Amino acid sequence: MMSFPRPVAGALVGLLAATQASSADWPNFRGANHDGVSTETNLKTQWQTSLTPIWEREVGSAFSSFSVVGDHLFTCGLKDGKHVLYCLDANKGTVAWENAFEDEYRNEFGDGVRATPTINDGRVYILGANGKLLCADAKTGRDLWTKQFDAKPTWAYSGSILIEGDLAIASAGGSGGSLVAYKKDTGVEVWKTGGDPVGYATPYPFTLDEKRYIVGFLGDAALIVEAKTGREVWRTGWKTDWEVNASSPIFNDGYLFLSSGYRTGAGVMRLTPSGDKLTAEPVWSSKVLLNKFQSCILHEGNLYTSDQKSMKCVDFMTGAKRWDVPRIKHGTFVLADKHLYLLTEGGKLQIAPISDKGFTPTAKVDILNGKCWSVPVINNGRLYARDLNRIVAFDIHK
Image 1 (spheres, one colour):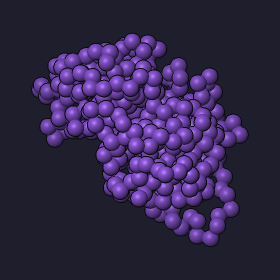
Image 2 (cartoon, one colour):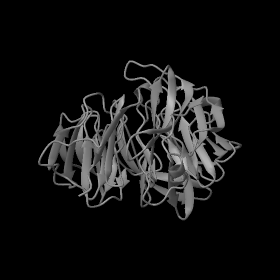
Image 3 (tube, one colour):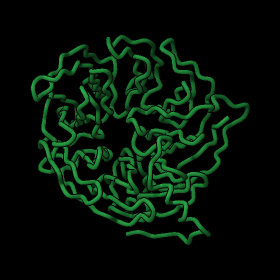
Image 4 (cartoon, rainbow, N blue to C red):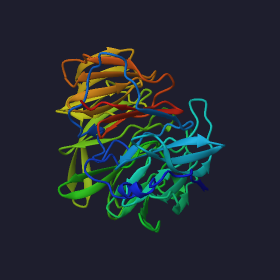
């Protein structure tokens, strides 16, 4: 159900800007290019005094990151025993609308929604922890269509929805499909592929030889399908403790990177079309990277991450470690203006020029004090971050 706060004059008029994403927006998990890289420039990288939020708001427990389109920010929280999809004024933090769309999910590591809202063509898409997929109107929060998945993994549904052309693609798992695609405007099923256990990663798109593909990083395998038809073109077993494959795949110039935590590790393989399939030639594999739920950022041939052991830089093509910062584990990154913005799991923001020579912060400041496993976002000169319950927004434009 939905509830609307009493609006100030004209509050909903500006929501029209939230219905169409532009190149400057951050419309989905890891940004428009699915890579964790912001196009923002002219940003502050150091402060003479402590950093003061321009606004902050309690929204209730969730691991959701943010999508920002126009002047509106979308995320999730927990309220009165319900998972809530929020649309907030990105400038002030006030609530434009909220939609309580699913019963709460509780877990010892943190309650609530794991996925991040996806914004496209005036609609918001969110997959709840208990498997409810909601498509809502971005201007009002009104339900447009829903689906219910029933193959919830150990730590709940976590992957966000991928919009690819006119399709909304999800990882449902089991009889719901390893990957399943719906018409994004109506929810009519277009294709469904596989019956693997669901993983925790968001479906990932890439282009090879002018053809679009989708990677599904599943509970015990990695799968590639044609984007338009869902036809399987490649798969490999990828067994991880607890079936936790959560880190986002990365495709670059013909090469696919995958990484998992626990004792599995990472690897790069070269993908080549072969008839109506793809073949994969291993390039390297090792335990140099152990991304349990974090995703890497690729920049100028190097992977940057804060995995289950440490913060590090690793050569994409060889797996060689460039540098390592011990004891900074489970952190999250966004890259902007040639700087890495690291949020540690304890809530400290550290900023450093991106370099394969090392991580030398120009700023270190505590901005949150709860569990911080959600990826920060930089958009329109502002940095947005959260712990399980609270969002903080900072003006970092010079």
